[in-house]
Amino acid sequence: MFTSGHMFNTIRHTPYAQPNGRGGFNYIAGGFQNQFGVETQIIAAIYGLLAFTTMALVLKAPTIENPTSQTIVVLIWSGGIMFVYSFLIYIFRVKNGGYPFKLFL
Image (cartoon, rainbow, N blue to C red; front, side):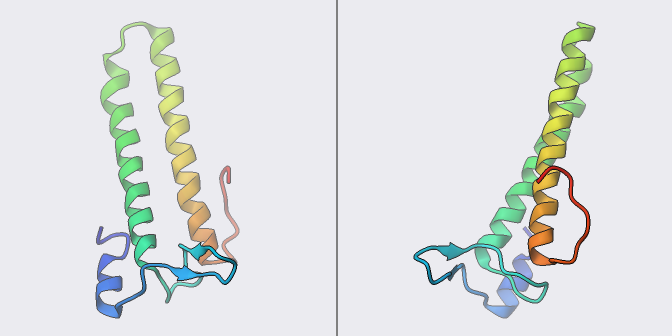
């Protein structure tokens, strides 16, 4: 929670989300000096999912004895890590429009 900005929201009393004027809500605030409460929860969930996929790869793959199945499991979990990390970079690009790198999204 603290890595994703919980203290920033606590100190600055940021809003949870912001209406976008079209009947919906903005969940990610642009720029580094702005952040919504829900954004903290989204980033924390992404970090948790990255930790889960990494631990699943590290703990599950070595226990599989069949080399073909082990290769498939490693590719699946590695692809999951790449996809979730790609989503994290996508959110970073939303916050900083000039960021030039991306993976899948």
